[in-house]
Image (cartoon, rainbow, N blue to C red; front, side, top):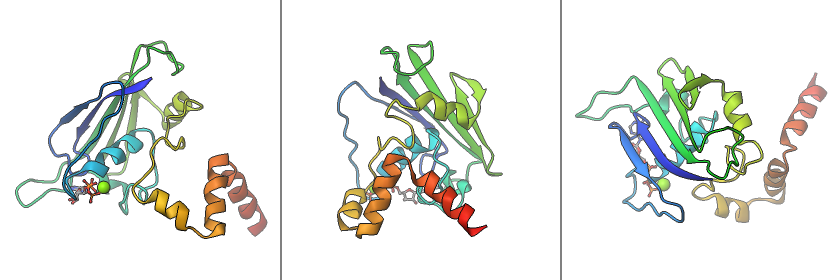
Length: 180
Ligand code: ATP
Ligand code: MG
């Protein structure tokens, strides 16, 4: 299973439709500061269902839509698709190639698609569960994340391990229950 292609339209700095093709193996994306390298990783996490606008470096979901420049008008929606090679059958779906799409409008409403059929965010989460991909899979290590872990206080570092172990949700629920 590997990422074959990303199609980006209207997401962050990508005003034109861009198609990035990847081969099996290692790909490096290079470019000057602010040219959009991290926006590509944001796009991947976003399609996989990232709902935290802070981790997408914005303050509201609308911030992922191309906001215009002096020469170009803002766009009305953003759309990103991932095309994943599934010849290994790791994704529990009967297709050799799987296309996942997310679209968001300025109203904040997101639409999700698996192989062009409309679906729920939950279906995307279920598709990637236990595959090592997916937004909780630590398959993307963000800029500064390693420094953050090394420099973190013991308590903050514990949080990272708890998150990796999947127990943060239980702790959060426990804290909420105790507050009531
Ligand atoms: P660095 O090397 O500093 O990490 P980078 O290549 O990772 O840079 P990004 O963070 O991907 O750069 O891109 C930042 C650029 O994306 C900024 O110029 C910012 O203005 C632009 N950008 C972010 N959101 C939007 C948006 N909604 N509309 C238009 N441009 C946007
Ligand atoms: Mg960057």
